[in-house]
Image 1: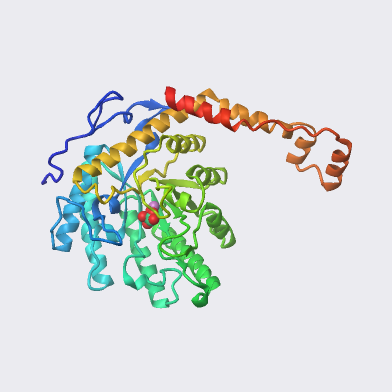
Image 2: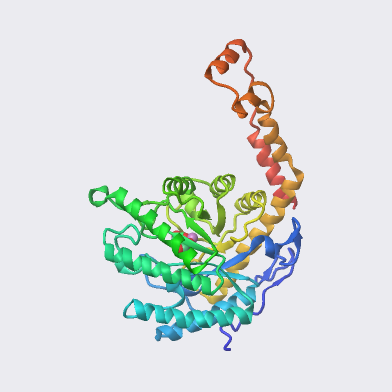
Length: 439
Ligand code: XUL
Ligand code: CO
């Protein structure tokens, strides 16, 4: 098979003193951290859209990316070249998993039947390459936001014909995800939301979205697709009010519509920050509620208010993320999917490798620091002591549900000395720093 990234060879681990930009400094796939190899802990995943399909266009200009396939006009030939390049890319970086939207991998045809035929042809080729390279599908999803037919949404559209098309699309996407052994299936709301209530029946839209999810659950059972269903929250972009705003909103929706036993969440860092949360907050909230499914790792630019999908290079965020992942007992069957793209000005193919290396090294280092932090236990000990009043006396009664307002009033009337202790935030931040500096 033709080699596409001819000037790049396999990326190796060279250790922290290496000055080779095309080498890992911290990601050492076989190194054991917390009882498992880094590779097993991190479950790195290549996003097909940003890596193979994205061309670097922005609202002010066309694509800038220089790729080995740039200029190929035949849509199916292009899809095949990209597929080959995808596996070469994963192989050279040592990434085991990938994730895709149906429309990333194969072009739309003149109608749905032809579109499905295109998809089948590419999926067969994909399966062959997966076997040859020993790669796995973390998740599949359906792109129900790019084509103009989805202008008013897909499962929340005002047009029943579009709703039907979306149903047909997810049916097919579930079939191909199963065919490729996908371990999860993601629903990201795309255009599921609204711009103005002047033209929107919000109740009908949300009820229809729930009906859509129930149909997906039913169909998965029918075809025996056993992968985990995930919803990916995002607060805005493309619509002003996205229905899956954040983890808390998704939880309430799932509960209301009796869907909570079928879904977990796929949390994306930049989506969390757009919702006004830290990534850690969203991940922790999902974890304590038992619905942490998978992660789209990237980072935003705090000076910009949109989804910049940058490669994650912030060691503080990486450490706190991996700290939550450890507390969750790992992320499988989810993974760490690089929903990240190189900047428009980083247009050479080499930049794609450099972006992934930067992200993989940052997460690897975060994994190691988080593991040490948990072993050290200072943060856990501090939190435990901070809530000690709930382990005895009135606090214990509260936690065990043995009290009521009258009893609390009696206690408060008899208690003349309320004393609080410092939260010691600065000290805790210094401890975190120390682990990052020393590891
Ligand atoms: C969009 C986004 C998507 C999903 C998959 O912001 O994150 O790429 O991850 O549809
Ligand atoms: Co995402």
